[in-house]
Amino acid sequence: MMARTRLVFSGGVIRTMDPALPRAEAVAVEGSRIVAVGASADVRSRAGRAEQIDLQGRLLLPGFIDAHNHYLATGESMASVDVRYPKVASTEKLVSAIAAAAGKTPPGQWIRAWGFDHAKYGERRAPSRRDLDRATTRHPVAVSHISGHYVLVNSLALSLQGIDEFAPDPAGGTFAREPGGRLSGLCQDAAMGLVLPVAVDIGSHGPNFHTKAPLEELVSAAERAGRAFLAAGLTTVCDAQVTSRELEAYREARRLGRLPVRTICMPLSHQLDSYQSTGMAGPFGDDWLSVGPMKFYADGSLIGGTAAFSAPYGEHGEFPGVLYWEPEAFRAAISRAHRSGWQIGVHAQGDRAIAMTLHALGAACAAHPRPDPRHRIEHAGFPTAEQIARIAELGIVTVSQPTYLHDSGDEFLLRLGERAGRLLPLRDELDRGVTVVLSSDSDVASFRPLDTIANAVRRTTASGRAIGANQRLSVQEALRAHTAAAAFALRRERDIGSIGAGKLADLVVLERDLAGLPPADIPGVPVWMTVADGAIVHQASG
Ligand SMILES: [Zn+2]
Image (cartoon, rainbow, N blue to C red; front, side, top):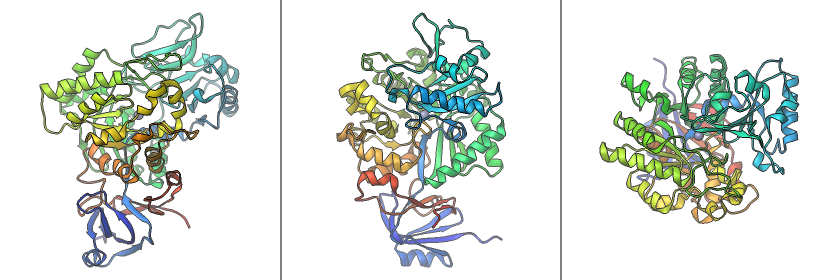
């Protein structure tokens, strides 16, 4: 029989995220499980012969959990043209980045770029397909906005997909137009699925970024992003928008031993019927790859200007927002998913979308009570005080991304005015007893947990302005929200998210304790070691 790995960690600061024993001197791991936690002498005597790891004052935590990211898309974006700000800070820079890629790409092949953010350009206009046409007319081009909620395409891409100059808007989406009604090439939310060569038809259930790609390419993307996650201290991630394309890629990656992190899938709501016909609902799977909550979209994107607020936002009130559903149809679909046994996660940013969401979830729970459904609101950008009370009452978990406040906070201050300070009211939510979860929404924002934690603690914009300073979290609250609370949101708290005997041995060691550190220094703290399933899977060099 193969000897099971035995490790004992001691000599540092150990924060367990278990309220029954918040601090410990030592932790022992055997095989894939934690077998002892407590005083050094006790743990050593229980562990027997084991490899001793001296933390030398470093911080040991449970492995970080990203309860809402776009795992596969993150891996794919790592291989596409990077046009994120500040690397690309103007339309001209965008054109030259695409032209440079065109020079290296055979004519006819798609050019994909990721992450443009024109709200940050010093120009008073959005780039259009005319700009991309200047870069190439021989390649179809698709440039994704940093929000993931829209895409800018060139004229060739439109004509290849059979979209003519005056195509009508689809339900749940819009084609931006120039004066005179011609398409500008910006395709928002559900319109994305019409202009991209997509692998799956998701109707108007969400933004369609599920583009066609060979399975081998997707497996490589999963492996690439998974390794980067481990290096950042993440041991579990939840893909917040999974179709047959992603599920197949994760299954194949796992079969080949190329899925480096625990992966939980949130099937998108267009699959409700097909799952129902098989009798299946999440949670389903094993502790490495599983199906979790079902994902619904209530509205569009905060950064992209399509979130649904009760009063329009924008400098001139130009963003009325987009609801993905007619409220009655939404209520019926949520009710059906709830009755089938699904835990439900609803993307809802503006207060108008959150109202529709609470109404639907509240009605479903009242009509068909079941213990601890633990439904979630993804993002929960702008809940009112009354809505926070209702969220608490329904036992709903909020899964929020404070890095938005940094990356796009200056635009929020401009577009939302005094409302901006009430974005992500995490302090109010905690005070009300809501389980607050921090996550990244990668690749919309950095997947690094220490960036996310720092942004929940400091709440300052990229230019250094405060945004809702009274809603700041403490470091300890933020750590909990990215570990134990995240495990709770995924219904996995029995196995992951804290350090305790019997739990899976997913651990991260940071170079130093975060307590007392100025928030600005948190993102720079190196990850020294990551342990997943009892194995050392990442170790800093030197
Ligand atoms: Zn997302």
